[in-house]
Image (cartoon, rainbow, N blue to C red; front, side, top):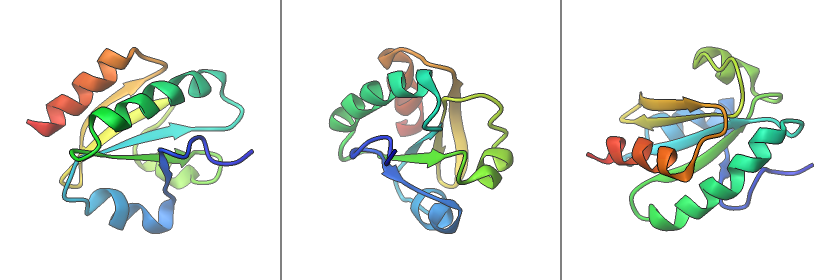
Length: 112
């Protein structure tokens, strides 16, 4: 099974610093795994948001099976977990499948 989505750029331990922590814009990171049913439900919701936030935020995905160190570093205990990073720090996070509105407000807080 390939990447979760074409609109969520896969990121791994090696490029996490450059792509996420050093990003000038907020970055939404979806921590997921191919075997996770609720993760697949979240993907289309996040893909829709890429259009609304196209110039304001980046969207990435981390496969926790392949990048367990990142999951541990950010305390990801259950998936899907969505974390928004701003200026290299965690701005907010949601655990479990949530509504589009919940993800939107997470991003809007980071954009203030």
